[in-house]
Amino acid sequence: MRKQIAAANWKMNCTLQQAKELIDGLINENIRISPDQEVILAVPFPYLMLAKEKLKNINGFKVAAQNCYSQTSGAFTGEVSAVMLQSIGVDYVIIGHSERREIFGEQNKMLSEKVNICFGHGIKPIYCCGEPLQIRENETQNEFVSAQIKEGLFHLNSSQLENFVIAYEPIWAIGTGKTATADQAQEMQAHIRNVLAEKYGNEVAETISILYGGSVKAGNAKGIFGKPDVDGGLVGGASLNLAEFSAIIKSLK
Ligand code: PGA
Image (cartoon, rainbow, N blue to C red):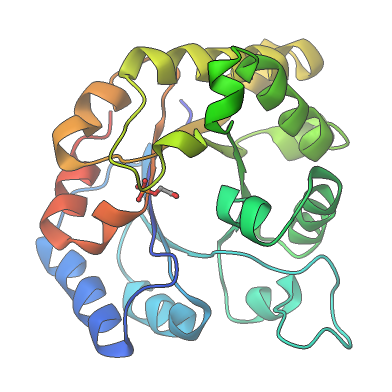
């Protein structure tokens, strides 16, 4: 069975002290994580080693960076490479979050290179996709998201795509309090799985965890995660609150 995942995306939030409290708080909650489940904490770069250290003996918890650069090393002031992340044992990297796409102008082509560099260094990408409001209003979201999947991922081979993680995050639902309905999430995520199945076959597509992101909260997580093609969530705002995020983890299938 593919993994059910609760991934916290802290974005650019938390001081060191707050980061410690949040991680310790989660550890102390002692939530039972089954072998088909995973909790991923995508923390800011300065706290990656802290998170790795604190979580090293905690079953089911993994650590993610929120971005990396598309080159391994060199004169790229301010960037962080997959080699560095590998050297401190980071498990995952979020690639192509809509904030990276919209604010920093990252495009599918560059994101496909980032995906490659992660694979080259033993780090699993969490590849994000999702449409802006305008596209949803024009009802062309399926084509838009298909293009993000094809241009970002279709150069990979089937064994790379096995157990891959994708996050569908409609931009109009991120940080807005406006969640997609569970049915809207299911509809798009089934579409994404179909697009993958057409290229890689059903068997591979069925192993891919597709997370929903966009205003997931304790109150709506169970309904959204209950849908057959929703394998958990990528959670921003609510992941900064211990009680909220703990309840979200407990809402996983
Ligand atoms: P949100 O963010 O849960 O605050 O809407 C989700 C995300 O951007 O990953």
